[in-house]
Amino acid sequence: MKRFLILLLLVVILSPVIGQSVARPRLVVGIVVDQMRWDYLYRYYDRYGTGGFRRLLNEGFSCEQTYINHLPSYTAVGHSTIFTGSVPSIHGITGNDWVDQATGTSVYCVADSSVKPVGGSAPAGNMSPRNLLATTITDELMLATNFRSRVVGVSLKDRASILPAGHTPTGAFWFDDVKGCFSTSTWYMPQLPEWVVRFNARSEPDRLVADGWNTLYPIETYKQSTADSTPWEGLFKGERAPVFPHDMQKAYREDHDNIRSSPMGNTLTLDFARAAVDGYALGQRDATDFLTINCASTDYVGHKYGPNSIEVEDVYLRLDRDLAEFFGYLDRKVGKGNYLVFLTADHGASHAVDFLKTHQIPVGLVGMRALMQRLNDTLGHLTGVKDLVISGANYYVNFNHARIAGAGLSLDSLKQTAMVFLAHQPGIQYVVDMAHIGAADLPERIAQMVINGYNRKRCGSILLLPEPGWFDGLAKGTTHGVWNPQDTHIPLVFMGWGVKHGISYRTVHQTDIAATVAALLHIQVPDGNIGEVIGEVVNP
Ligand SMILES: [Zn+2]
Figure: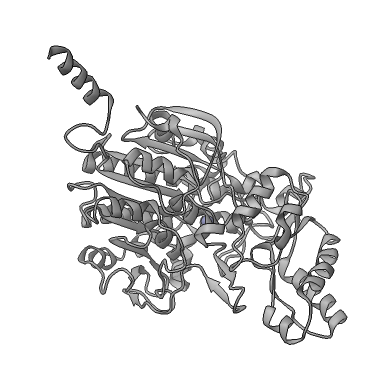
């Protein structure tokens, strides 16, 4: 009997699921820092405080070699992949926009004309997760607890709030530029909850922009960045040069959208996330809740100024402070160790092309729009039919199938002509016929990314892969979207409930995040999941 009791005691101690109830954290917080390259964890490490990024690394578990394993590397795609554990081929979110191959129409990832704005304006509020074909880890938590959990998505961007929160959340909220407030749609609820109405009534954006945007520390201490004014940085309307201080009050008054391109956008987002924790009592009830947060301003600032700017350095130093405050708030509200956090990114970004050119690094701009125009001219000259290509969205050649069929042309012979033409364009390394991916002469890892990204109903017939350093974008600022590490090597750090302290250099993927969270929560993985559990993270 005594031996049996000891054995029983051992089982109870060793197994997290055999006990009074299933062991789960009170709250899961999934933070996606938009456009955060992995190297930013260390690029600014010496300047971070102890409570934000450094706390994540010093208390949590960092998966140092986390890669995106699909194309293209864009916001909607990355968020869908993180939360479904799946890839565009399966979850269907093949870009922020894509061309529906059956109709030839351009589709915005979360557009849904069947729902109406709630608290915001049209068409910005006509949004839902309808186009997302798979469940999310947040959906699975809801299913696992018979909807006793509460799931909330928060972002300035509609897509970065909607896609992580899944199909069944308590709410998903995003910033409405027309009204300058947080809003949702009738997919979720008929009217805003009282706590959102109260938050919006505080006119927080006006307060945040009032002092303008100056550097957090003396500007001469920004040694990780180029001089304040460079020709490749973007401007706010009316600005003569891209220099501090930026008059955010004026910029916000002219267009509410401008708060996104400043660190105040992240502060606003985390303040709203805090209001959500309060308003819905997240992590303070009898079921596990899930809060998804996208910090979007890192992306807008990155696009405008490029990674080597003082603006980007400053936006990370300020986000670090905001995160420290947010974690401190969760410690007090939910309790240290009672919540599980993971922080990752939807994609990274390239350096500004002209910045790299000044350092003799081989780079260039592909210019997809102009390239598709030249392709249309070439094909038109040959066939007598104009505009056979609709667009070059997401590096795919999207043919106008209705026009091709109407003119009695052969898609195969058009593709052959197009591929020869495209293969001779500057900066184009590979031209892939998507009907014959297996025959493409691609390195194995890149071939896998191409296959994972390809959804035949929502992708074009030919895919272009530029040379390293080349991308489709503008000379001002920068962008992302290609397979290369600057766009696809992302941070992934877990901290808190159930997480070991440590570091791993094993290569894992963006698709492995949902499965790892599912394992920690003892719930089913999403229905399109192809990822694997990162076992090193889990405290046994
Ligand atoms: Zn993004």
